[in-house]
Image (cartoon, rainbow, N blue to C red; front, side, top):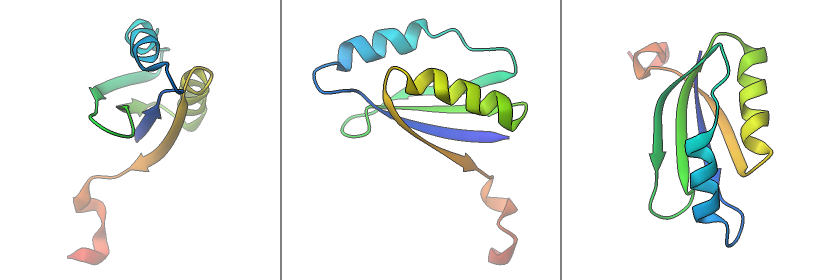
Length: 84
């Protein structure tokens, strides 16, 4: 499963947040496809794959302990069948 998490640093904690994310130990069952810094809000985005829902929740909870984040399940656009 493919997921996208947007990350917003706490006020005044941008540099600290980015440093912490760079040091983040990715748990087994998670594959980070992209870790992107963004101009504006949100501050960063992680696109990742999880082997199952439990692993995804564990990873997002690990992130959420340090930053404000929102996670969405992502699908390739071709999987939106009603658009054909």
